[in-house]
Image 1 (cartoon, rainbow, N blue to C red):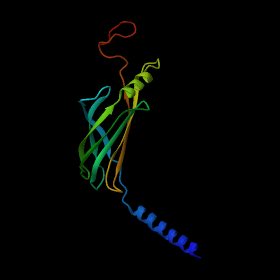
Image 2 (image 1 turned 180 degrees about the vertical axis):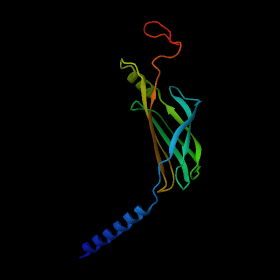
Image 3 (image 1 turned 30 degrees about the vertical axis):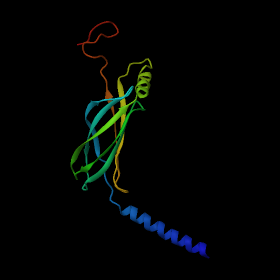
Image 4 (image 1 turned 135 degrees about the horizontal axis):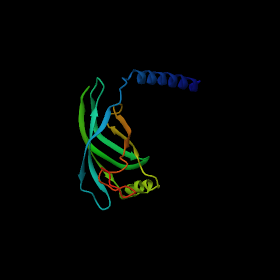
Length: 167
């Protein structure tokens, strides 16, 4: 008899939780782009950079954050990652620039170089940037930005395979 009462209570509690979750406002994800990159002092075999992210908030509610994380994958391999304890607000229908120091390890650089040495020339580079703006329990905002960079076949002034310089 007691088991039936516990089951009923669990069913009611589950229904209440699901109803509360469905009442939470939905947000459009922020638009995040790289606004700038500056070199930082590294240690040993690592490179460090300060990545400036432009975060655009397309929502009617501000985004309050207390901590930022970022990971950059290039050609399906992790190239750089970083975290910051920076706190702030991205205003409603507004934007902010957030700075995140990232690290590129020598192993990640070697992996990228080895992947590029596949024999055929690289014309396009695919990238994915994942991150989050940490908030309170239900207000953490995750973002993702992906794209393809078209690389020039040859650099201006560089000699091609025939020894001819391009203009």
